[in-house]
Image (cartoon, rainbow, N blue to C red; front, side, top):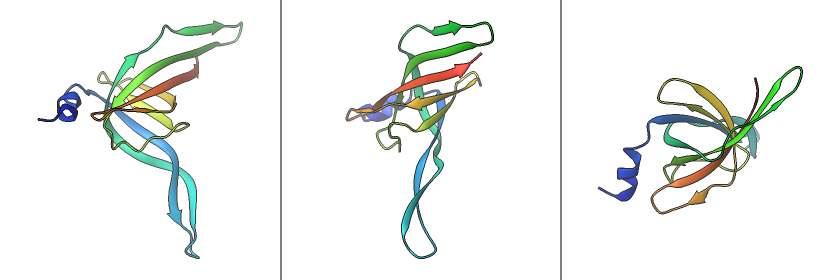
Length: 116
């Protein structure tokens, strides 16, 4: 077993990745549009820092970082929207930062921006 295959055994979460996808126009030109780049991507999420909740009279602004560990062939770039489905079924949305490549996996910083 390779190191990548061993790491993948620890990936219990799933990701759907949305961003710019390439397509051909009717005239043959290449263009880009928003769409799903990948779904059911095996991954692992690790909490990077403590939650930062900004309380106001009307709403709470949730903002914190996590790290996503995934396969090196995952089609993800900075700015992509990532929806994580955790092992327990909870869904959360994040924005991807620039990934750091290792031979066996990618480490992708994710920023959660939401309101409670």
